[in-house]
Image (cartoon, rainbow, N blue to C red; front, top):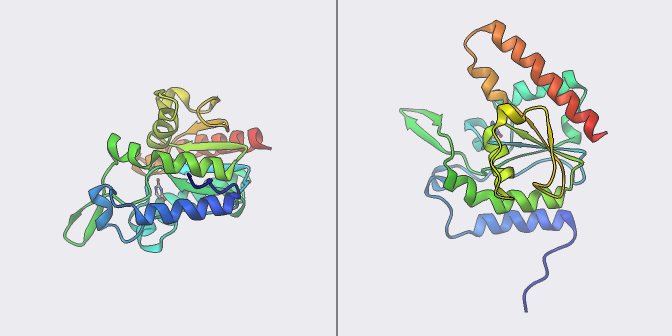
Length: 208
Ligand code: URA
């Protein structure tokens, strides 16, 4: 007889972690990561933020969004009046994928296969957290969530919109904070930051 999936969300999240840790078929790059980085935050959070994958600092700390992109996200959340401690933060891909040049570990984008591999974990995580609104930070998160129902959503056309029917919970699309860090000049970064804060405010209002 099949084992009943746990109905308690905290137990469901714990089961998900154990299962990922015990997986014999993880993508090859995961073996080079320090550890998987799981989501963080309260079950039942109004807002659930989904990023791409842990970066160098997240890989070492074992926590999502603690590196440069995370600090930028923290600033934007503060300006939007969203308490990070009340939100749930996670990533579409749970291991850091990188290429090493000397001592530096450079972020490598996850490919479609990587995103597909981790997608069931993300789906179960969304179900367990059961947020009012899932906020997709950037193209990878949005692609992972859209693919749950076989859809393709381009981030720039979907940005600022609420998409329903992807998960049981509505999805709001915005940019990834790393995108702002890569903009060439300070003016563009500042303008981009203002727009990002406006998106976060809209998301918070939607989830209120
Ligand atoms: N970028 C992400 O997408 N996730 C993190 O946790 C950190 C940086």
